[in-house]
View: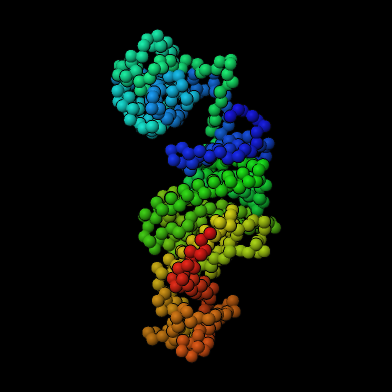
Length: 507
């Protein structure tokens, strides 16, 4: 792929690397103010990278002496295609002394004579003797990740030795030489890459992709809205990582490609988040497990301003609780540090109709708890809204079955009584200290209810034998809490009788 500043959006290319899909394609990116510049998106299961195309340097040394990670795929003939010198017994790091032309190390374009190998597949070898380093490299597998750092002072000595070795036969290629260990299988080629990268006049300059932004996808979120507002960006989106890093505004001038990128990135985030959720749930009981966790945007009213803003919140349903975090819990202990918790059996969840949206934000829902202000949320897609709705009903069922029963103080015919909602029995009213219920009905006998929005409630039950409707009038000082709890018990009961009730809600 050649450097081309005019290139805009390109179709997404897909390839499989180590049985995992990797997708790439050209887009443009901006900070929301400046003119967009072309970049390549590189999407793996765990990371989204923004990359720019650069010319390879014309000298066989990296542009700086920072640590670099380079993947080398071992070849059947030629192995890793490099030789090493040094080791702890020589008071030297493990240095790359030769890179064999057209073989594995050479094909990366990122390894150079004079590079010190610091880690192999994440394992430090800086304190290893020479022979131990050789064995580690030999047994590192087919895909080897080398962490290297360039040592400029060693390069002249190694290049001089390389010139000397190139005049000899390849008698050391059996990997047993004491001074120069060749990490390659026997091969007919004795040539090695010269001390400068091949850039003959007959060939065009070589290029490679360099990461400019790396966003981990674990518990990241994607948004098409201008941050904090209800304004949808045309043909653009942003990905924000858990570490606070943002991709910037990614622009796609092709709406079909835009939709593909949004789906692929979102699917990866959901997959990773669900995996993390399963790992967390190993530490919790079945009745206290996490049903859902993910990012939403909460509507925040601004004082003395006619409009509202939106704040990202990490929304979780765990056991009997709805939990709202500013930042996602990063470990099991963090789950006990949530400052905003509501009981799902005393909270009402409602999907907002499109005609009821307060602004241009779509896919909205309300969460209302007795005695507190409602919370108005928005998510990016209808699929995500359906996932939350389904998880909510699952959480309600779990919470009600764990709770078992709940009693509310009410007034009936001028007398103080207790109205009990019981998972196994249904509705029952006990007057005073009496253990015998004044009346009792199954949940299935409830035919309707009405209230005045303040304290008075009417429950309409159907008698099993006579089929007559019997109305019970009650007063409750926390009427809304009672109604929400009734709704939770009835929802859970319907789900237990008809398991298809919940499965039918899965998108």
